Amino acid sequence: MIKFDEPLFSLKWLSIFVAIVVATSLMLGFFVSTDADGAENVEYMEFPPVYITATPLVD
Image (cartoon, rainbow, N blue to C red; front, top):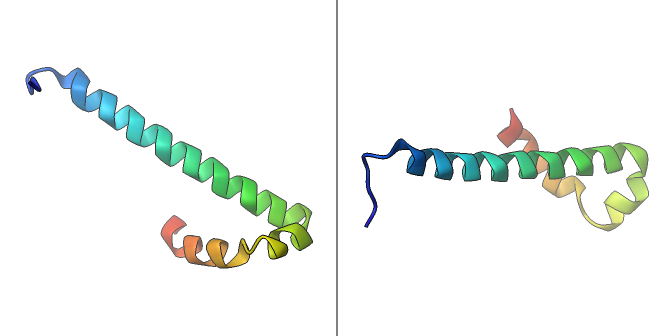
């Protein structure tokens, strides 16, 4: 049973969600840095469409 009186449960799921968001943003930042460093590899791996679709979500 889930005890709703304890705020630590919601904080635990909040921290998990924040960790997923941080990891996703770090991965997007890594792809952006690889796009700036070596555009040929990113173009071969088809990351520019992913970056274009992710740009409005970041804004």
